[in-house]
Amino acid sequence: MSGGIWKVGELAQLTGLTVRTLHHYEHIGLVAPSGRTSAGHRLYDDHDLRRLYRVVALRDLGLPLESIRTLLEGELDLAQLLRDQSDHVQRRISALRALHTRLAVLVERADGAGDIASPDLLALIEEVSRMEKTFRNYFSDDQVERLEQRREQRGQQVVDAEIAEWPQLIARVQAEMDAGTEPSDPKVAPLARRWMELLEAFHGGDEGLRDSLYRMQHENSETVQEQGGPPPEMIEYIRRANAAG
Image (cartoon, rainbow, N blue to C red; front, side, top):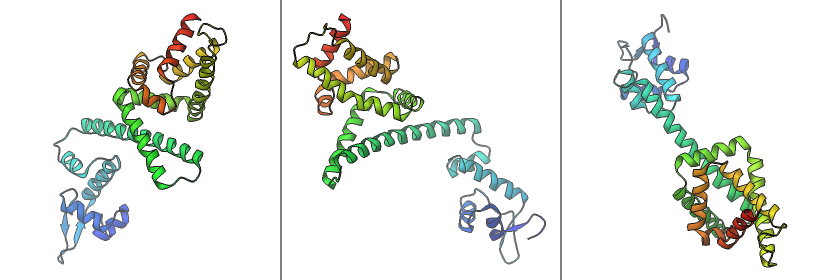
């Protein structure tokens, strides 16, 4: 090795890439050696090294090799390419967040049930998948992203505590309904108030999120109840309690 000239093995050692990767980059026209020895061995110079570092930097941003090659040939706009890649990464982040939420639900259910047989676990996964599909039918990608941002801002622990509170609250409201307590009774007021606070915690005052939630509950009342949610008559009971308060 001398004077800024590298053989393929030396360049691989310098950059941390494999010889096989450098051969592939040459094969697809991404980084080709500027010269060869009399024996046919590849020789890379400073210009090749700089181009290789650009390729590695762009690759680390997640750009496809074909797009990198076209970009370096001056046929693509860098700013637009980076914007497109940023959008792509954001969609992947949203998908991963959704997957994380699904896994968290499954972990919680699995922990609660103890040792779960495979058929039961598959049933749980199918159940969560159906719930997510229903959810996606009513909330746009933008709305899902806003919900994920709220979850991050408020903290997973806070959100989990609120989710865990719902079954208890629903049971307390059901007890008042079973006892024949009128919605206007002062005993119901704090329950109705907490109900609205938990809903507010979900949608954050966003009317679009609130309306999507209400529409999903209204059009899927049986599914909502199967998952432990409130029946339509309970929602109406709370509505009347809030109106009376």
